[in-house]
Length: 553
Image (cartoon, rainbow, N blue to C red):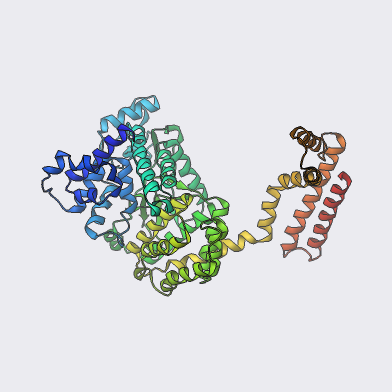
């Protein structure tokens, strides 16, 4: 264990003890290698009673320990069903009450990054920050054209601090992986590595500006979500300037109620926005705690969301996204065997598990949640019970789904605050079913096939020759490596569709036949064309492909 890691672990222990949280240290078994050092620490002998509630003391300790720990507090602050009320009330303050750094220092950073004095860049620049977060803080400003903007400024020295604390987390994850069977099942090392990528991405404000622009483009014309416009001319890696949002903070329920906001519509729109981002756009806001969400309630009957802080955005591998959608739909339809089979097919559990036993375990967990409003369901408890039940099947948390899991937790927390009677399943199911139908639609399949047509043609071109030489290799198992290399080179030279004029004509013929096939698939689905046109074009395209390949064989 590196010396600087040991020093940081001692700092963590001292911060917890200093704020009257020594029990946290004693109950943390990962400190076992240093337990004698901690027992001999003078600050544990002379610990005094600390003022304030335990929630306030925990919040102060997290703020003292830095951004990695602040963001951990942010992640769990919406989980009121899992946290005692006094702790949840204090952790919420981490979202917008982190101590700021001086405004004059922020002005210097902005001027240095943009290469001009502040007065040339802005007509007004407020030294007092609007909000201070763990990674950056935000100042109000006004451009010379009169536009109101916010200026986000990265905290100085953040990269060094985060790199050190990530190293500490990796050390703790390694200890958990080594000592604990439960720890290995949860893949702590992979989880920390995934978190490292996420938090390091937050340090590049140009990346965040690009994320905001992409999200704004995705929701163009959709009134449910407003994304502020970015001024790229005034953006750098440590400075970002964007449109100022004037809305009601998501957590100010009293103000929203005073305005007569339709909470049911607002909560249902939140679910729709989330599932649209994940399954239609495959690009979702993964830091949706109340401090990053505002409500535009100028029309209380049709409230809109406004999002800020686009440092953490998530995407899913197409395979994982498809499996996830099918899992959701299977749960909605109470097809628990399908859920179990999907877990096996996706690799989320080993392939040798008994599907019938997993089906029974999933049914036991999921069945009680239906026909109940959200206020009577704790998705956190359901998830914990699911992990508990899947332990015997060696089910493991997938690191690539960590951001999605976190976002789902936040969605539940926001739903509880807005409209406790929201049935998230009934709200989400139609969106997923529509997405599944569109994904499987012949036109959508044809478009994906057309996009990959060059790859398909290349594979088909190489297949006969590759099969022939594979058969030759199998019939001569004792052939030398040089002979096999010569055969492979010969196969490459004999690849159909060469660079000559005849090869170019053959390739053009295959492309024309592919276009006919694609046109046939689209025409087959069209209601405006005669029924016979689609099949005729498809047959013509298939015949053209067949003739083209026969000529080259």
